[in-house]
Amino acid sequence: MSGIRLEGARTLFYKEVLRFWKVSFQTVAAPVLTAVLYLLIFGHVLEDHVKVYGHVAYTAFLIPGLVMMSVLQNSFANSSSSLIQSKITGNLVFVLLTPLSHWAWFLAYVGASVVRGLAVGVGVFAVTAWFAPPGLAQPLWALVFALLGAGMLGALGLIAGLWAEKFDQMAAFQNFIIMPMTFLSGVFYSVHSLPAFWQGVSHLNPFFYMIDGFRHGFFGVSDVSPWLSLAIVGASFLVVSGIALTLLKRGYKIRG
Image (tube, rainbow, N blue to C red; front, side, top):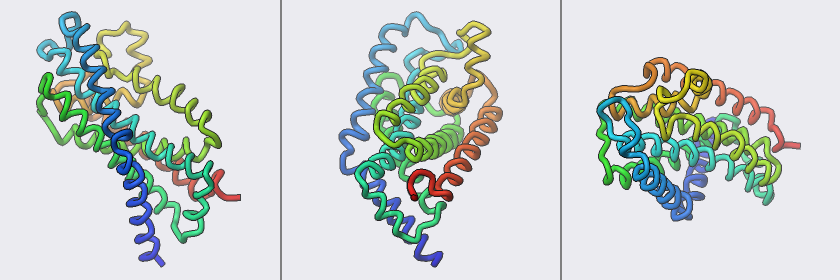
């Protein structure tokens, strides 16, 4: 039985990857174009007015933030959109009929979300680095935070997809939770440029530690210790994954 379940998890993972890859012009190319537009606009306007880390050009500083923002948003979008679409169209019943455990569901949906997030992130980096190559001082840090961030947002997308019953609920979750936390995480600025109060608020946002830790992999410097960021992001990933697994095990809003 375990072999059947493992094979089923691989099949579901392949199905989820194929789902977004067949429309890659929308799911991969479009987010890359959006990130490039952000870079062109913010880089052009603020290049000569914002100084970060003393020696890093603003455009180069902006690139890792845009890459990680794209990874997070698309990882969330993959698992959440897949679940809500399957629930509304009614084809989720065909997955429920299989002998898949909650672990298999989790690995398949989150794994596919990580693949999409990293695919978009690589695309964004490949295109934007042409404007101002940021370099990779410590690539292992960048890889670890990209994987943890994509995994966490994939699991959060599972929770949102399980909770939502219609598309406007999903849109509300993304517009009022994911988008604000992403844009207020230091993508476009260094937290040290903020007043003390807003610095404290930023430190309550786990997305800030994902962005800051990822950026450390490029420049070798960051607003907070990368070890602190790793601890907070790792703990957040475990908590969100635990909630997602619990909901899947109970069949929350997917089983009568």
